[in-house]
Length: 172
Length: 99
Image (cartoon, rainbow over all chains, first blue to last red; front, top):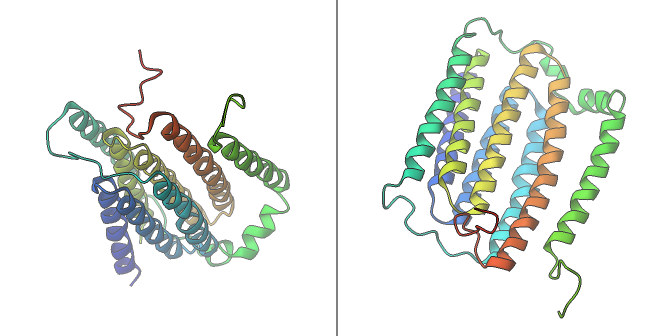
């Protein structure tokens, strides 16, 4: 059962990722990315990381992708032309480097295959909100506070960058 | 199910993100490919965490998610600013700093 679910989610994730990089319309790309993120959340559930699966759907699939869709809507982009209509050095180099990266990663994984264990039996307990919150607010109190500062700085920076007159001088 | 399948899936997703960054011209799509790569690394961290039964890997994923949210906000603001100045998000046409 677990294997079938993994095959389902993995196929969905890879197909959505390929659809994302090969679709001409930016909105379609964003929606394919949502599908990909949700299938990865399903894989998190298979790995018994319940909290992260929920956060993945809420934060990634919800908040961040809404931000992307808003920006796409705001800029009102037209479809990209000639995505794969002619052969160019750009595509050749891109695919070549991609194949190199993939073969390197798979070689590294294949060298340890068979030695990796199954899912740890403690994982039922470790992936819950309780366990993660317990560690997060005791051991990692300072990093949580620093994250709050980071997010505030990001909001202020985004407002400053996206406002109309960056120089602050001159006419409206 | 062994962990190497999860790691292999993560490697495939990462590679698709790399290919997208290298081949696409639209800055927003490039940005989404970067999110895809971040997410595949999160998958690796979660699978190692599940393999060791250790909660710290998942906490690292939590912080990576926070950084991804901040990065998305700032990056999209930069894209909006670039669009205002150049009226395009095509990275081959944005060549102010190119020699």
